[in-house]
Length: 460
Image (cartoon, rainbow, N blue to C red; front, side, top):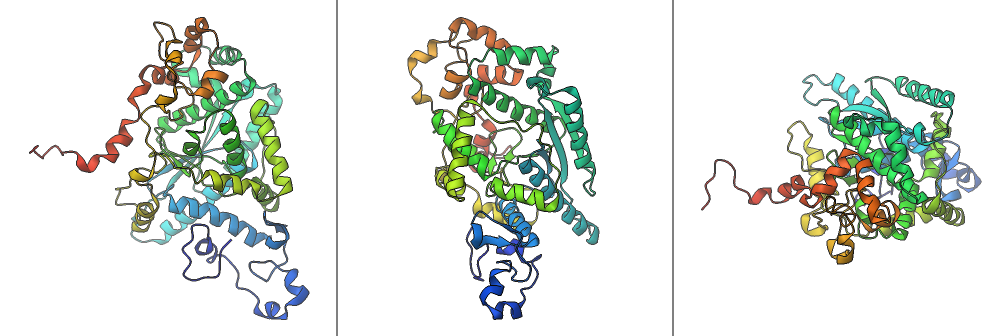
């Protein structure tokens, strides 16, 4: 919530983003005190409350204030981390659930306001960022009927087309198209790949890794500069615990930050501070249509953790936020920031915000190698030498170059099956397995840019 101090600079205060749309409080109603104030919105003190935030009875809001508070969290995350700037083209990953529905709505509203400002501005100096929507069709991995899938996709097309201008391009891409560049039957290869993973949790995690690879492929081929995910506080809290259980403690901080630039196209999480309970409430209040068909329950470790966090949340509504805030104290990696902006089209205020809040190299972890399966940063010293001889002569690096979670949940236990498993992976993973130690040189070059000679300078 926002505070009442005019000098507050807290990163958790959303005052600046709420004031422009908040109605002025009814001072007469506030003066009466007593029971009348208890029946009014805690923010505007004018309207009757219709819902509660995670604070329970102490955070009862009217519809407008509830939405403005939630939008304020989104807008602060976007602004302070320079997630979206005027020259950008952002691709919103849309699954049909409440979180992705809200992030699509908020990105749309942000674009709509930018378009209105552009139309009202005479010099037209600042462009309006573009927005696309990507839906990954995973029906080939589930037992949905074709009629249900067609209905779900039709609903998604309707949701996107009903958004006000500027128009947004929709990409409906089957998950098996991650293999399309190999010129083979994608469905059959995907089935063989998943069948080769015996662990239930490993299958779910592998599908998640394939999903982000496909989003990267869509964004790269269509000129997008950001990928926006709808990962909320609740989902991140589950990931914190499940990643710890899976032995991914070293790489955990990389996955839970607002920005993740280890990929070719940076991935951003603007709903990091928004619990699922509040997102569900907003969808209900605003009548935002969601597609429930494709949101099945998890199983294995992921399902157990989800059930555990749900119980914690029922006991104390702030538990999810506490988990994420606690994990947020972990030192982030050098790629958990948007690359520095030098574009003159970007407002100076945005560049100042980025310079103020961006991570400094000496305040972050550095990693030169990444897991070829899940792209997690690796700490090479943690791998025993006995693991490095697990691969074959033609494929010596796959097992040794993978993180511990992928080694024991995704990769085959029998060394003789490793060659066949490698042949089933998408080309992006195969390439990373063979050249994974090269790391992300673009980020390294950016860090040492000020120490490099330009083409016109001579070495002393």
